[in-house]
Image 1: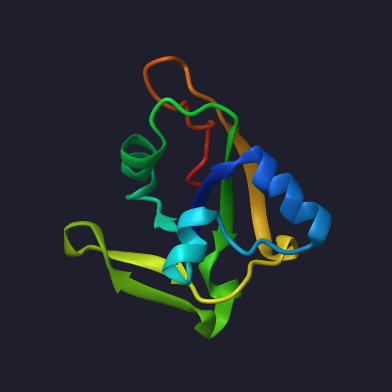
Image 2 (image 1 turned 90 degrees about the horizontal axis):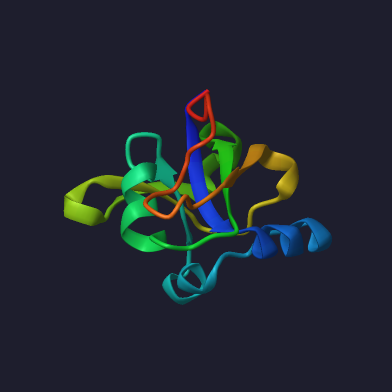
Length: 114
């Protein structure tokens, strides 16, 4: 099953665990869907939108588990990105790993594409 990825502050993820639902980060709430990235897109997403930010996590979700609420839509440079129209239940998450900032770039966890 292909994994899709969400980068977000660990504090937001911890709040989602407490409430048993993730409704999205500020940009998601404004846009009306939760932004995800495919494996081939997530490193650029980190660079473009999260540069210099510490305290992040990388959330991996099996795309098929999101059913018809997941839409692949054109975004950056016309590439199709996964957008979730609805909330994300933590039970649907495959794994969550820290995404530290080393002063130059985010350090993706070993085997993160698995």
